[in-house]
Amino acid sequence: MSILDVLGQPGLCTSLEVAETLGMSLERVEAQLAYYERLGYIQKVPLTTGCGKACGHCRGCGLQKAEKQTPAYWERVK
Image 1 (cartoon, rainbow, N blue to C red):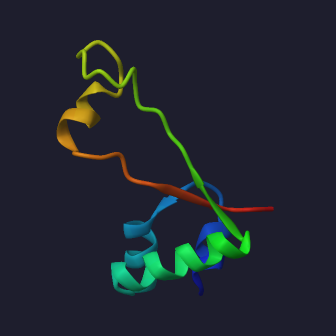
Image 2: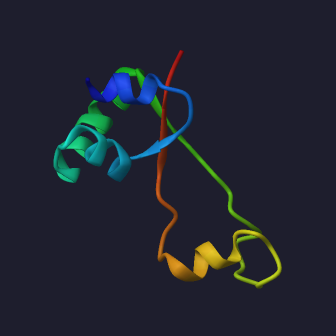
Image 3: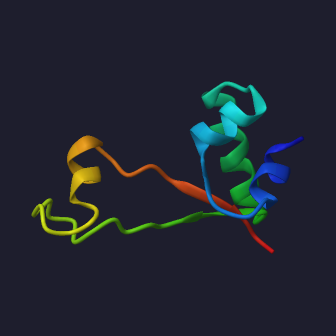
């Protein structure tokens, strides 16, 4: 199975999820993702988790407090 195979499955994946699925290092996966993005095979999917202000009222506020940055999600371009 390749990175493109993993990203071709339904749903979105983070770099870490791809690395764990394939048993590869995160650094190698991120380098490959950047390469495939330049070729137009994949794209980053921006996900908004809330208002961005960590107000405590939106669904995403807990995520913003727990993580310093939102992970990038990837999908294969059809």
